[in-house]
Image (cartoon, rainbow, N blue to C red; front, side, top):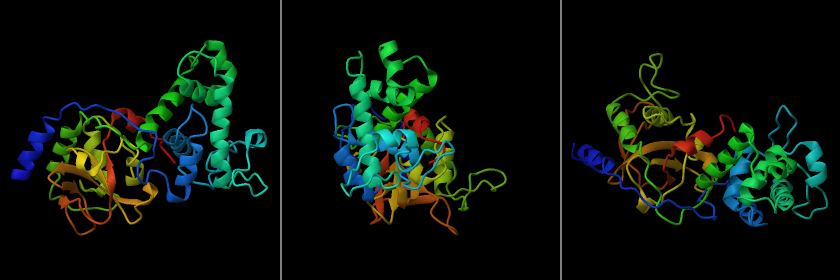
Length: 314
């Protein structure tokens, strides 16, 4: 009970911090196989950075090098054949340009971004936003309108990528606490003692039971924030505070591969004092568990914009 009371006190008095981000990648945000590529090529020109490039790749394919869309977009960077023919580069110097090879596709994505940025370099406004708008609507539209054009799709695309960027960047200053954190904790506390159900969303059909990500999704839904269904996508719902910066309401994640956020297998809601509320496994109930275990991966401070920016499928 002392822990619960402490949670209410801390969660109810979250002070506004100073938000901020960095251009370096957050730990494990990009699968280890691609992290060095994204870090290197994300610094190709001033209009991009590694976190922004990571956000684009995640939005386009979920880091899946075999992804193919109904519109014939291919590979981890989702190039259509015509664009690849013009802008694909031999990133690894092996003599070919392979859209299915991340060693070529990731450098090509960065190179294409920088080429677009050069087309609109004299347009007023933020060069990165103008570059992203060019990616979506074409450089001509950006030049014509003197910045991000008044197309809803393009404006949403620019906002989505720049918001997702924060979830791939390692913050350098204290991350703002979520205003909805206390409400999410309150919801989870009311579910203590509920039996775990794999795939459970807490519906009547599920008997009010949850699995780990079903619980966190429902907790944040209770305060008006829609999270993705699975834990490894929930990781991208906001920036990532360090262990010593955790506040109640942060989502905490666990993985057997500490280099790859796509391998995350468990999530809980941090409540303070080194503990979380989570739905652990079949046969167990929703309970308090310690977070300081060898498989602790990291944390996400959920933001409304961050959650909205997540693709519905990756």
